[in-house]
Amino acid sequence: MRILCSSEIEKNSRIMDIFTKAASLCMEGEGLSPINAEISLSFVSQEEIQRLNKMYRNIDNYTDVLSFPMIEDFNLIHDGEEILLGDVVICTEQAKRQAEEYGHCEEREFVYLFVHSVLHLLGYDHMNEQEKADMRKREEEIMSELGLERKMK
Image (cartoon, rainbow, N blue to C red; front, side, top):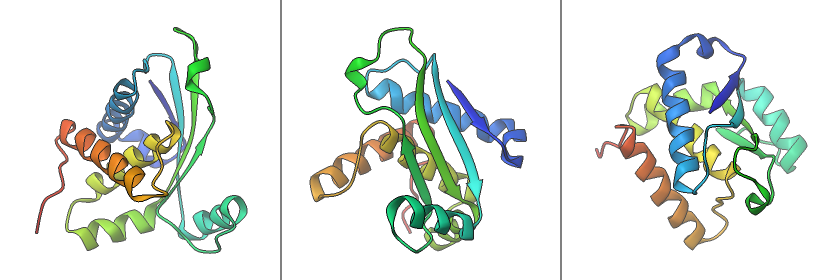
């Protein structure tokens, strides 16, 4: 698993190791090998994520994370083939606000948003209640495996 990140967070090997493990868990849970997989990860301002949200989703508002999948049909992936999953874009300011709002550390929020986005890259969505429940269940399983469970207030 390779995560291409061009921000200061890349210099923090601890968080990058957690992101790598999280992405690997996401992929393995879907029966995919993370060995030859790659994800692009960017951290942007509120203004930049709003610009991207408007450009790609026609929603003129900021959001916490955006996902840009590169693969439409995972059945076409062959063993050993390089997998370019796609791009994850996280709004730094919104992630920090949400961490404070939900009462947990920033690291947990950044990892949660990353897991959420990687699951989108793998085809998960939350357009209806069943999809939302399935995605939330998978998010919580991965966060638990990482030791970053949600703390109940």
